[in-house]
Image (cartoon, rainbow, N blue to C red; front, side):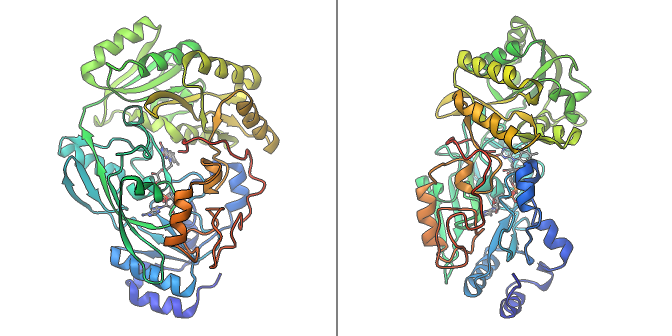
Length: 474
Ligand code: FAD
């Protein structure tokens, strides 16, 4: 769409002229995220582009831009640093990208937590927290390059989730300040159950302008890579460590070979003939972990403190970094997001079934998390993408044997996790964005009187692997 002249003129008065970017290169760059992990999203989203990028530095500027966008029916897609995986931050209907990474102040540490602006980078929050003897409860493996606003609106869990659960778990976000897209934008402070209104809603029903995040006590974690000759041994070790409540850990991931060799941060140090379990453990419990490793047939190949200068950051090979490194080796790789049975015997049966059926087309990558109060065996297997049918067959096989899938091959909010949609988010969207100018086309159940045509207006009927309900989506 071409932006209305009255809108662009008024915009110049709302923000500094240099904060409005309209050149082709910027519009293209800011309109992309990591959607290309999915071959299917690549086909659908590669040509989508905003008409301008507006860089807000204050909440007041955000309010002014929202007011103008409402008046002129201009779509707005908020953006942190564009590391989301599902085309979440890609504008489907043109309009403007609201670049929030300059609203990045770490305002204050209070009551064991921190108040921050949405554009603050997670690594900056983690480092500032550590100076206060605190640290993040959880973060994505993109900690070094993504924002807290993007994590809350687009992410779900990560390193720390084996301890603290997922973002959506009550108490992991204390409050959110949100600006709505009404004729006169409202500024709301959401707390308690109201946080669910905008958490992981892809910015479709409000712009987050401040976050109160609880933290946890700093630990000088020890990073380990542990090699195992067989996948079964590695699988069993993950469960044993995961369920050892007396051993404090921040992460447990399993990488099947050859995935380990693909991971640049650790490949040179890990044993190329073994599968690897990567973990961050409390140094207080290190000796106990070493005993467990020895009992279960493992060999430690990396044992370094977290954030030691020159040492690898082991989590750079976990979560969706695992897929990234695999794609650097062969761009035909893609992935799935799976919830295996929350029980060691059943998860092993499922895993061996998938390996028997798909062999090396299915490379196992596990992330242990605490979900609904219990240790869970989640996975982001790396798959060889041959064609749509092959990917669908893998998804169908998962469903057949009870492996839950959060589909990463759709940009539609409801199809990625909540099959039936989240009624709280939908109801809030009707209040907070009645015209549907916020990230239009992503919430398919929303039917507006504004610019978006409602269900699947941007077309997702052919979505690969129409979804299976689960909370996981990273
Ligand atoms: P963006 O991509 O810019 O935005 C994400 C979504 O949030 C978009 O829909 C955007 O419109 C919306 N948004 C952004 N800011 C706001 C705001 N202020 N108000 C309202 N809406 C807003 N995710 C995980 O959960 N866990 C992981 O471990 C993980 N690992 C990853 C590894 C790799 C290599 C990659 C590429 C991605 C990974 N992700 C993971 C996904 C992503 O990196 C994270 O969710 C990240 O925190 C997103 O932050 P961002 O600043 O890049 O957000």
